[in-house]
Image (cartoon, protein in one colour):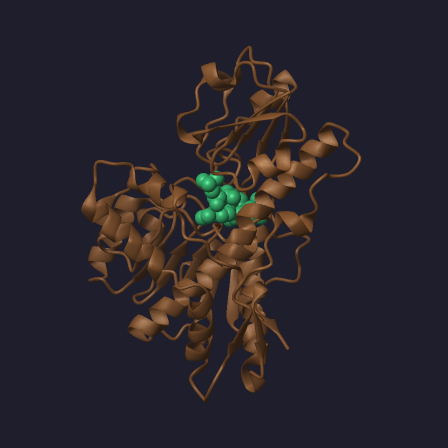
Length: 377
Ligand SMILES: NC(=O)c1ccc[n+]([C@@H]2O[C@H](COP(=O)([O-])OP(=O)(O)OC[C@H]3O[C@@H](n4cnc5c(N)ncnc54)[C@H](O)[C@@H]3O)[C@@H](O)[C@H]2O)c1
Ligand SMILES: O=C(O)[C@H](O)[C@H](O)COP(=O)(O)O
């Protein structure tokens, strides 16, 4: 059995070799020629899995080690009977970590005190819910907009989009969609952005294209820069708008989900799905071997400080989003012609998720640190 896998899929050989011959490929440039005689295709978000790629091929199972599926033509796969599986929720904790690292950066660099602000989350799926619950667990005034989830998800404070636009922190976790009753492409356009309050912080770690980037630049001008922007996803990746990069607080190359554990979990979930599809009774590789425990094992919290600062110190000790921002800016300055965006993603410096780190003796701050995702004793 021939298995084609994206070279950026962690543990691909270790997990899948006992099922067939694994060939690692560049997912961004994958061609029909390369996949036509494969049985299994394992991708990440950079491969457009369409009729053009697969027509007449022997592929019978496609796995994507990602949460998002906007790169997959699901209707086509269903029509021609190709099985599909993705990795829902695999990197939800990683993205939530990213959001709070972004806020910590805004606190440490600009004293942006976010804990007492009105917070809005867009999208209440695996990621949005994790982010919402962390805010709620810290006692924040948080609301959420998700027109497709509102009914039956009574535990959260659901509101209309108009209300989200009045929040002082907005965290975006909707998928990129172009059809249905609530398409998200351009859902934050000039009209919506004009309603943002001065001093708002926007964190965008869903998909590029949900915010209209030209309109965002205009709004930034109109607010005389009084807006804080943490952007991980971009329209037209891997070519990104440098004018926008130049005005944001944090610019990262679509790595919010790139924790060590989140990426490994993505491969692991696809592995389980493929084993099930192939009717393998039990996986040959255990979850314990497939997902790392983390290295940075404990933290000492220290003295009486503002709550945001306690959070920032702990968060930045395990993951400071500024390191990814600085790397991106230096790399683009060195070489704009080269595909810097994909290079940064391929050579990503590993990071652990907050929950892999135990915090002891935090006393009053324990609840806060537990709510933001750390293990607390
Ligand atoms: N930056 C990254 O590294 C990264 C990592 C993981 C996921 N993502 C992106 O984040 C998205 C969300 O991830 P998830 O795991 O929560 O997905 P999910 O499918 O579990 O949830 C998406 C949620 O968005 C809601 N939604 C759909 N249309 C909406 C609209 N118009 N307005 C508001 N909400 C809407 C859906 O009802 C759903 O509840 C993914 O689709 C993916 O594109 C990015
Ligand atoms: O959808 C997802 O899971 C994330 O956006 C994921 O982090 C994308 O990573 P990629 O597949 O592009 O390496």
